[in-house]
Length: 447
Image (cartoon, rainbow, N blue to C red):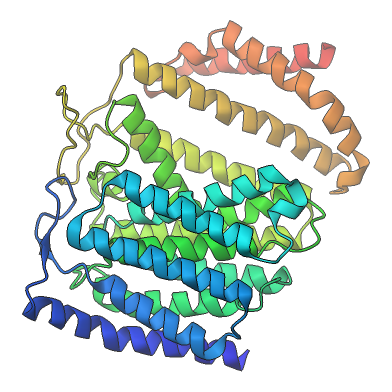
């Protein structure tokens, strides 16, 4: 443990030293680049912070981790990703070029490593899932870098939890703990100068590097023996819930509003929280809290049985989905044909989007939430009856739950549950909701 601590402290100190140095070099050489007009902050900003992060990360890993084939592939991939991001910061690469390079690096790493990963567990789908996971998370952190201190802080928190996850899961690659600890130290040192008001930004060279290292280490930290594959795969998702949620949230809403997914804009989760009247730094801290909460859920899920973990995790994800529905009602897009994103808001709601398309998409999400709630309520009832012994009712659950879900959702839809506008819910609607729920339960019991 002492070696791990020294690795972390070295990366922290190097980052604390190099970040202001890179900032001064950027200022004196005039290597500044104006932020896009669609970004949250419209001002000149030094985007060289990724250089300091990479230097601190690479130095710590090379000094403390034992070099082997697996570590070589991971570090070589990190160098390519960093250079692609650096070129993009200087010359602006096309999104397709960045995406192709990420797929090449992810494929090189997954097929080049000599370990028993998802490929050995799930076959070809496991390899594909691993590659998509790395590319998706790499871009998710790139999109998350949209407010002072957000990406660096979430990277630090996620890296610490992945370190714990790798230790608990009996990691297959000896360098994994050193990789994530070096990244956490580098991110924390950079955060000292990136938190509001930011003096320097990490740029694509930093955000893509962070996303690549975290996604790669999280997928490679999966234990050799997987008693419950679903729960094991769920743990990295919980640890990285903030970038995953933000990316899916933005992609869905931009798709609904016919706006390019890779276009920069002020429609992310953090921006919408600020529009509610919350200060920027408090919005960032609130997302830190979400990341810590779900990270703890993921780690605790490994130590508890499936039934107990399922209840807490599913209810927490449902609450997050409901919060997403609430944020999605804030109008942040111009009502013009070109779909340009509105700039920085003044901390207030701009209205509610109520049209046919929005209501249809909202109903789909309501169905998903009801689906999760039905399963959670059903399993919870059995857990309480059988005193938390999952093996006692697992066969009953698997045989009866499809009937329960189909019957209940048909009753909910047939009796008009999804035609309500919940903002105007009254006493009559609550009574109707009660009768619909009772009818769904009775018909499910009969079925």
